[in-house]
Image (cartoon, rainbow, N blue to C red; front, side):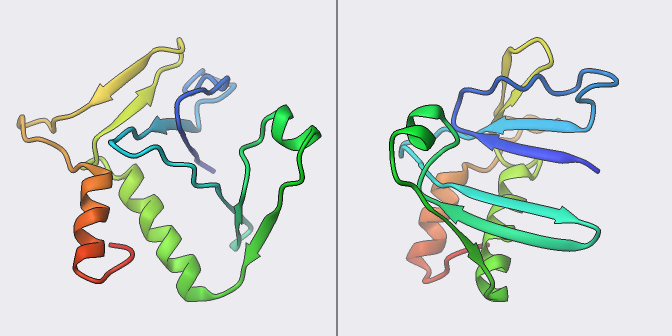
Length: 134
């Protein structure tokens, strides 16, 4: 089962290491806004659980603060978040890809040299059109 991780910029996981993390992909999307979304989505045997939360999984947040996670049950809300993840991980979206050696490689253009979609600007355009998700 593939594992996709979307982080702000720090990640100790080394994706793509044969026999260890070859099913893991890590991306980072940076834009003009500092994002602090905390969304966790797990699928096990066809059962999906989606959670939103107030903190990232760091010691300072888990040991010395009161934080919360909330399970989403509304299918429309879950579908909206799934669409946001799909757009983030789409090869047509500009992002930074974490390599197995820990280096980040930026993806700005497709194979034909066309500029890839800017995630945050696309969301701004959608909001202006009265839509939340693609």
